[in-house]
Each structure stands twice: as C-alpha cells, then as structure tokens.
Length: 350
Image (tube, rainbow, N blue to C red; front, side):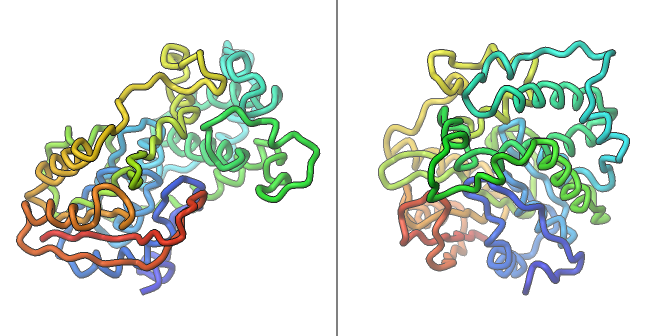
C-alpha cells in the first residue's frame, strides 16, 4: 500500500532529523496493519512520522518524546487537529514589537557558532514573539516551522560542532547546498509554516502528545511502538540532546543559560544522562522497557548492526511475548552513516 494513497491522502511534513523513519512508512505500515489495535503509543516519537502514519489510519495515538522540542512537534502534528497559523500570526511573528522587551541571548551566546549575527538577532526576535502567541497549539506549530528553518540552514542538519565557517568559506564544495544555507531565515520559516499548516488534520479520534521518559508512562495501550536510540556495535549511542541541544534551548529560552556547558565552543547542554558504557547496561535498558510495556503488542524498531544484537533482542522479546517475529527492510543507509550494510528491522511481539 502506498502511504501517499491511504484514506486521508496525507504525508507528514519533510524532515531533516537523524534516524527519521519517514522513508520507511510504507514498509512499517505493511506490517502494523496486520496487527489488531486501536490505541497506540509511539514511545520515542522523534519526528512524529510514525505517529502521523497511525493517526492517518484512525488510530488513537499517544506521541511521546523526552525532549521538549520534539514534544512540540508531536503536539503540533498529532494532538493538534485544527489549529493553524494565520497570515496575521505570521506577520506578528516576523515583526519586532515595541511592547515586548527582547533579550539578545542567542546573539550574545552563539556568536560565530551556528548562524551569522543577523540570523541570531532574527532568532532572538522570533522565539520571543512565539511566546506571545495565544494558545498552546499555535505556539507548537510556530516552533515546528522554526526548528525546520534552523535545521535546513545547518551543515549536516546538526548542532554538534562550531562550524559556521563551512557555510561562509568561499571554496569549492563537495557537499551541502550553499544556496539553501544562505536563504534568509524568514523565507525558510514561511515555507515551513505553509507545510505544517497543510499537514494539520482532524482524524476524528482524540490523540495526544506527552513529554516523559518512556519508563514513566503508566497508561495502557493496545500497541507500543519503540524506535529506541540506536547504539552502534562499538557501543556509541545516538545522543539526540547532544545533536539538537540548540532546538531544546529555543523552547527553554528563559532558562537556557543555566543548562549550557560554556567550556565547549559549540555551547551544548551539560550532560544530563550518562552514556552507555557497556553491553550489560544496554541489555538492561531494553529488558526494562520491554518489561514495562509487556501487556501491549510490542513493535521494536532497530537495526541489525547495533547493540544489542538482533539475536539478543529477539531473545529478550521472547521473555515477555509468546509470538515473536522479525521482519527486515533490506539494506538502508542512513545519512552520514558509513555502514553500507545496515538493515532496518522490526521485532514484533504479540
């Protein structure tokens, strides 16, 4: 079944998020549609592409992510059924107002790090204007557009290093799109406001977005989909706070300075969670999360070249589910990945 031709005829907005499942939705749905469920939890929601898929098929979806900026993505796309930004809202967001006392935190703190001085000043204005929008859904829709505008203007679409020079250097380039990088923020922002406005829809079923550690969720669901952070065979974990700390800071503007590690040039957040150190800790994490949701049909999305191994994950799943099967997408290489033999897998436990 072609996702573009499902009953609501909708696709989620484009994304530049690492590890996004947006390109795998047809394959994912081909297996999820075989399962009996009405309510579903997307436990590590990220871009909300899988939540959007489920919402489009009339499921009662709860989107969850422990990062606040991602929560706003889920709030705008999944919980929101009708609120969009108007031309009047857009005009308000893109104008400096005498009645608002603006801070210049981004301009002061990230000088020469990610964006130019003029771009930083624009960000300071817009993020503080967003806070004056009426209603939580309007704020989340605006945040979504701002996140995408920030990502598209970044080399690698990440905030993992101080590398503004890559955009500004007058050299021959083998990657990236300097035209896109140099396109004004306002132009990108308007484009993404249009995209998110087009993506908002009412499925007829109440959906929600929450912002918890997955293990803190106590409600019951027919199905739980878990796209856990990928851990390479060398034990290196995708640290999304490290890669997207700038976006997390935008939604915590007033307290941002308290969370920054100023000893590092790119101004990341202070480490809030220890990185995985060995295979035992990784196995324990997956054991805990599968046990926590053992009453639900479980769908674990992972890759066959990581830790734990596919065999270990299947063994763990069998501790909680009588019927376990594994399906492989085939060879699928993620952006920036040097591994050309990685296979996306779904481990389904019923």
